[in-house]
Image (tube, rainbow, N blue to C red; front, side, top):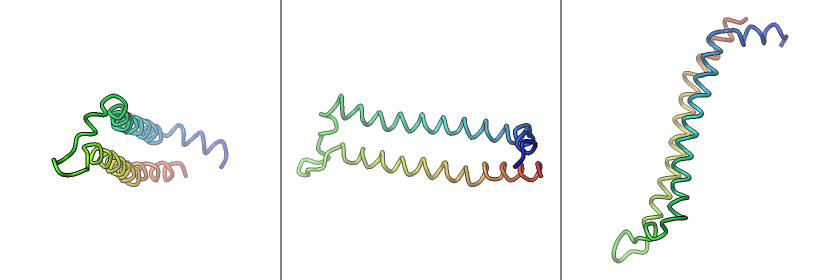
Length: 102
């Protein structure tokens, strides 16, 4: 692609909207993931007793296991939400930019 095409893409308002929206969304998702992941890691570091609490009086499973599984499920869910939005809204905006530039 020529420099002229790159310049037209960068000048396109829809491209600027796409970059702004995608970057903002990515930052928010990253912050949420950090809070969940480092929150769980902080529990491991600073409140081992809470995570070691048995779920039942006769069982050996502790509270840490379902919380850890929850972190894994949350990670999968947040990734799915991002992919759905990227494949929908972001791809639509990208296609519009390409159509306008050509």
